[in-house]
Image (cartoon, rainbow, N blue to C red; front, top):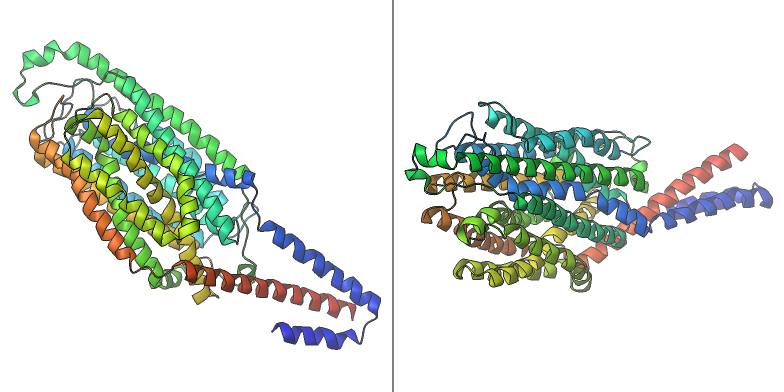
Length: 543
């Protein structure tokens, strides 16, 4: 095609004076140079993009680590202690329903939002930015109300379920377009990988912030508990009622204060992302007359082998880390007996993960992403085994927490670094279909969120069957054993299954380099085709 266009230009050259030809050639050369400069992202752009990942992680970390224990031990009125299932008051069974339905609804909204985004047209702000801007106000309001204990005796379960589902919907409207934004900040793989590393570092810092804010503020409150709830009498409960009521109110206020601080961080990061990042369209995408139909795109995406193998592998590994996250606070409080240390242990894990993100970024560029998956995620297994077998020891627990953070960093970085490679591979096999990026990202998040909803629902229900005692100072041995299994043995099995599935993932470093060259050739062809069409139009007007 390029040779044919050159021949047509050459045949027209004999009809025009040299001065006119030179005048028509100069603008084409000027137009080509800026496109090359746009591929290089500044550090400021990468930081603004990376800060957009903090709201999802700060809120997700606070909810993931603390919502379960909040629903079980805090989300009751001062005079309530729930011993059995009630459809209106929050107990272990109701908490499992809230956690499962909330996460399942969150999972369902991902493909729905992806569908709506794929139907969105480009605006002056881009195609993805309007979703981020308009979802933020409702997200922060609903998040704050999740941590508010309503002042009515019945219907608390519906209150938390409503605002939990509303928040998950709004944060999905933020996070799905933000995740897809990776493909629109640059067309260069190296720049996208670098921006992803910035993003993962900030997101892990976001988890540190979420852990520090929620953990340290809540940890300062004197959370009340009751000794031997099964054998307690009315007289013994009334003896401790005054102190218990005051402490319980302080704990509720502490959760609200933490929510207020996190909401402020959410808004600030959303503003910086909106002002500091601009979307870029692919040259060959701009030439496409009509976007691909959503369900046709979904069928093509779900039939792409590398994508299915990637999300299946990460489904199991993500589920493992979500089980640990959802039950870690209860595990530290009741199984290990570190009621006043769990927030510091969480900080140790997240700080370790933050400092090792750059190391994993260097490792995957030096040795490849599949190698980083095997080494990074499998490194958690020996430490989980150690936690399962050792007796309660605070120093060893801190050592294990720091070491576990190394694996958490790999689990944070690698999925989002490998998804763009799968999308590039898809674009090479389906070069005429574009606009599928939200489908890739939304369905990856859909599978992981739905699995996490099932895991949290089942784990909370398991605690109910084991005899979990609401606001108890200690738990029966069956509850401690159940927590041990949920935090250690179940994640180990899931990690090993995920690593076995990664053996089937076909995109290694050699194929990634080949895809990069082929995509660059496609972009160059599209750019030269666009320039040739412009030159032909100018030539026709001159003639």
